[in-house]
Length: 420
Image (cartoon, rainbow, N blue to C red):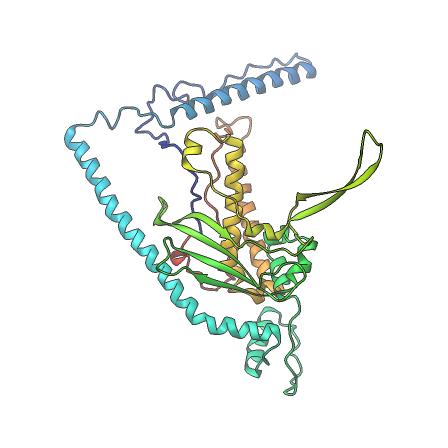
């Protein structure tokens, strides 16, 4: 799954053979292969190291020059399109018109996929309600449910020992079910602190719902249901994710923004803040007093105060520094990814996260990502006799959020109908 974070960028065109003049390309100018001076055999090892350092410095300087020139070419027109004959230009414009109709169909397709997801969520609701009843201990698990679950356990572990049959067993609640499930998710485990755990023990359910057709924008809502606790007064904490009405360039819904519930913390129980007590001395009377100061701290409950995307005007006017903009983009990506993982993974496969089974597949995907990086590194290797060189390309802004986990082997994972 992927989606585009709605950060405004200036309209730029990537350099291609059609819009990049060959006469300006650094590779065509012979700049891609810095000349390495010959090293005579009678030089001392120290001289070899010095020459190698000089050569490396020259190569790095040349690569920096190449990268700078490539960056300067982005967004510039080579005049190729402008110099086409008028009849050809009309054909080019006609293709843009055809693309408009393709975009309209893609937009319709994504909205229909969204309606299909809503339909199947309604079909799953009775199963989710049954799951909640078993977790809370308000309902007795049936023999058929237990038998079906044991068949799954045997398939996963041939040495699994079936449980004794006891029809007189009473309903038994599963303690800290959702806290355990959240902590068994790779991303959420990093933001759930020990202080948060005391509150999340009261989490009784996590629910998914879609926004109504009357909503100004499409989207979904994650609801965290809590029993009475000592930390806040809310029974339900919601996090709503909104999409833009039209799909983005990639053909997926574009993330617009998120809205979180305001948490009504009880006195001195705000888990998103730390209280620091310091001694303060009066310069005149020389007396000391204790001063209590609060400061923000890491907490899972910061999830309900999502980052705010910067306005397009602020980006275009340069009111936000590049480093600050990248930091905001990263926070938006993480926030959106957590919402998608809750929606697509944790809620539908809660039992797998509770037992840790899902973590196995999440880690497999993490390893696959690392292998891809290793493969990329291997492709850049070269020996002394090779004409090829390893060139670090100009850095690019972070792309849209991508899912990290995946469905177990053999499971159906219909990616095409997932809205972003």
